[in-house]
Image 1 (spheres, chains in turn purple, green):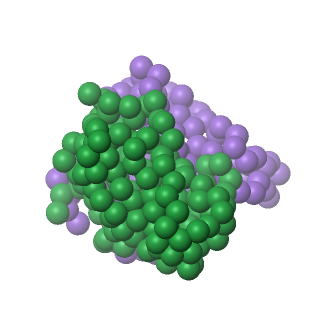
Image 2 (cartoon, chains in turn cyan, purple; image 1 turned 90 degrees about the horizontal axis):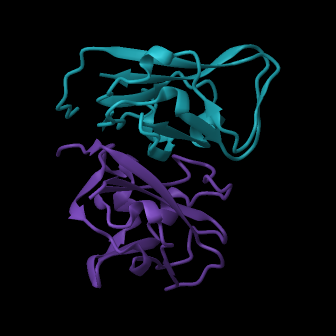
Length: 128
Length: 134
């Protein structure tokens, strides 16, 4: 893999859905609970541990910076997904000077997704 | 081959509507991309995304091969009838096609349906633009 950058830290955020909840279509699902990740400048982003392919195939991520600009607008979740199922996957390199994770969110299209037991729907890793 | 460093990305959707061979569909005006410097372009297929942000089915992988795209800079068609298959990362070992800092005139850019084979009416094609603000 052609990877021109070295990383000092990797931090992974879990998106946890409550039991008996439903992820509605087109709802903005914000990342909460990680305020200390607010101002980091990631060099790369990846998605892993996706619970269900319906989430991978029908979800889009919006990442905001501290100025309130949506830097990644409707970024395809599958494009950020790194797994052995996608042998051609490349880590996506970014340059976002200070993310605002609390103002970042993902949306599901297609059909609503029902969560039976409390689950991590996916993880979002920042390399910085 | 190097990979782009993504400063901003913006996903644009074009709905095919009714199908006809040689039909051209122009991009809409996208304020966020106006005057921006575009250095990477991706497309996605059904193999990547089942449903578009607007809730439409996404063009299949074979269907992408039936669509070409023309991107204009000013009045010049700098990228002429490029295959949309070639812009899909999964088709090119996960890489992203990079371009030399184009200020695209999107309203004069368009897709062309070469053949309706492997396409369905009202499917959408997705373009992801990597850009930096001028």
